[in-house]
Length: 639
Image (cartoon, rainbow, N blue to C red; front, top):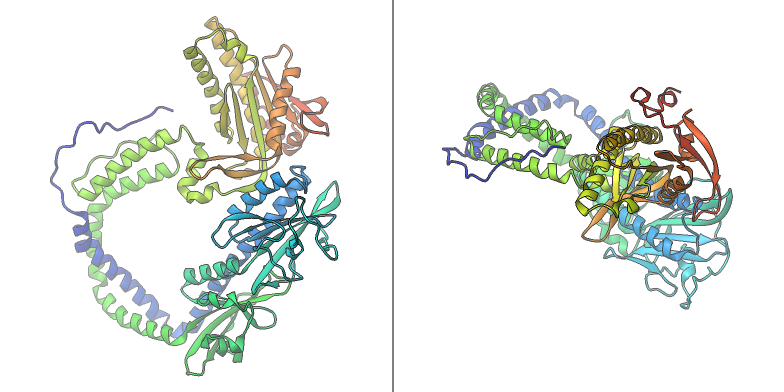
C-alpha cells in the first residue's frame, strides 16, 4: 500500500472565518426545531383519536425488545457451558486440569458479564468452581471460602469443608447430569438471600458422559438486565415468577438483597400492588402473548401495564412487565397538541429558510461525510485531502480528517484490515471473544535459517518483506486475516473477525494462489541469480475461540485452541513430504471435508502429529501454478 500523507509543516495562512456555532444557532438551530415540531404536530394530531391503537403497536415493540434483551443474556450464559463442553469434547482439557480450567473460566467470566459462577463436576462428584466478586474480580472458589454458598440445594454448597490440597468430593448424593447435548436451565435456588438461575450441560467425550458444566446468574446479573431495559425504554420494569412473586425491579434492586422473592400484594411500589389486584384489558395486540391493561392504585393513580411471559433462565415461565403513569401520557399528548399548532404556523417558513442555509453549508459537509464513509470502509487509497474552508469549525474538521487519514493508513499496517473496519463500525464489540469454526494456515520457508547465515541483515529483511508481500496479498484477496509473523513464518485464519460460511474453501483457494505467486516470485529471483525459496503450508479446520488475548494494557486479536497446534504440526509435516518440490501444502481431512471434498487434494496417508495421540488424515494440494489454473478449487465451489 502506498502511504499518502498531508504536509502540515508550513503554517496555514490566517483566513477570515465565521463561527459555525453562531451560524447553526441563527439558521439550523431554530429552523430544524420548527420543522421537526411541525412534523411532530401533524403526526400527533392525525393520530390523536387513535391513541389506543398506537399504544398497542408501541407496546409490542417495547415488550419484544425487552424479551430480546433477556433472551440474549440467557443465550450468552448457555454459550458459556456449551463452550466448555465443546472444548472438553475436543480434548482441550481434562476435568482435573485445574491450570487450563482456570484460564478458560477466567476468559469466560471476563467476556460474559451476566455469569457470576462457573462450576465443573466430574463423574466422582469432584467439583471445581470459579466466581466473580461484587468488585468484579475473578477468583477460584476453594473449600471453606467465604464466597461459597453453604445452604443445601445450591450447586456450590458441596465445596464447603476443610481446605485440602486436592479438589474436594461433593458430600451427599451425586449430581444428576442433564441428558442430551443442549443446555438445561435448573430450578432457581435461593442462597444467602440471593436468587440464582443456573444452566447445566453434560461434558461428553466419545459419546460418553464424563461430567457436567454449570453457569450461574445471580441477582446482580438479572437486576443489571432489568435496569438496562428500563433505562433504554424510559419505563419501570419488574419480573414475577410463576407463583406471582416479584424477583426483580428496575427502580428498587436493593430490596432483593435480603428477600429474593416479594409477594406482589406486599411490594412497596403502589403501581405493582395495583397490578396484583388485577388489570382491565384495554386493547387487543397483534403480538403473540403480549397483554396490555390498566389498573388503579389506592391513591386513584392509573397505570398502563404491558406484560408478556418469558421462558429464559428458568424451567418455569416468568412474566416480564413494564408500566407507565397514564396521567403522564395524557398530559404529554395535550402538550404536544398545543405545540403542534405553533409548529404548523412556522413550518412553511422554516422549510424555506432551511433550504437556503442547507444549500450553503451542505457542500463541505457532504465532502466530510464522503471521507468518513471512505474511512469506515478503509478505502484509504482513493482518499483525496479535503480543501480548507472559511467556516472555522468545518476547517478544523477537514484538518482533522486529513490527519486521521494519515493515522489510519499507518494503523492499517499493524492490525488486520478487516478488524480495523469492524472496530470502526462496532467499537470494542468487534473484538469480543467468540467461539466458532474457522480455518487456520501456517507457512514457513524451508531451510531459510541456513540460507540467511550467508546474507547480511539488510538482505534478509528485503527477502522477507518481498516474500510476505506475496503471501499477504493472496491471503487478503481470498478473505483471510494475517494473525502474526514469526521469523520467516506466518499464521493466518479464515472465518473471523467476519463470519465466513466458506472459510475452508477460501483458505484452500489462498494456498493455491500462494503457490502460483510463489513460483513467479522464484522465477524473478532466478533471473537475478538468486537461490529459489521453498515453502511449506499447513491448513486445518476446527472450532476455536477468537478474540482479544493479553494483559491489562496490551491485547492481541488472535485464535486460541487446539486447531492452532494442528495447523502448525501440518506445516512441520511438510518437511517430510516436500521432497524436491518448491511448495508443499498439507491439508487435514477435517479441512478437506469442510471445503466440500475438492478434487485437487491427494491423500498422503494418516500421520500421528506431535502432541496428539490419534493419527490424522493428511492430504496434499495439487499445485497447478499456471495462471489459467486459478482459482484452484473452482470445481469444489460449484459442487
